[in-house]
Amino acid sequence: MNDAHVHMVVNHFPIIGTIFGLGILISGIVMKNNVIKNVAYVLFCISAIFGFASMFTGEGAEEIAENLPSITDQIIHEHEEMAEKLALVLYVLAGISLVGLYLNFKKHAKANLVSYFAFVVALVAVFLGKQTGTTGGEVRHTEIRANATVGTNLETNTIEETDED
Image (cartoon, helix red, strand yellow):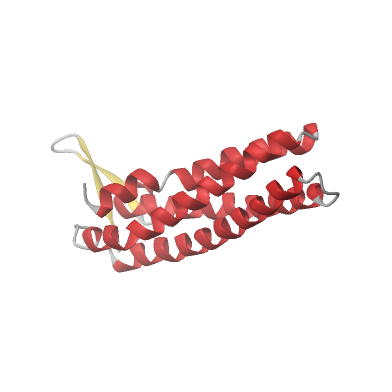
């Protein structure tokens, strides 16, 4: 298993985990249930750990991917820049989550305020996660690139994909 393979295995969890965590956090806020909020906080921390693993394997994956056909340095660079932003936001979210866990266990009056702050940061993380996932998908899935066009080859009756750079 090389870095590109490991990267593909771990890079989905920071995005999906944050989306699930946000949904769980919203449920905890609406239901005013600290146990549910704590589940979201733990999920945010796990997402940040997987985000770190994704960043750690990203450089090796880049070394492999940049030698593949139809992959440009620009595509990889856009994904890398977006992933760095997401990673920073996930680390901040994990820190907020640790504070939220601590305050919930201590039954501190400011615990609710932290949950709202975590909600806002999680929204940002979900947005950046979507962007990171899209730019990562564009590395290998040429059909989702903005400049991809599809044409039909009338001689063979097959669909051909072109990538106009």
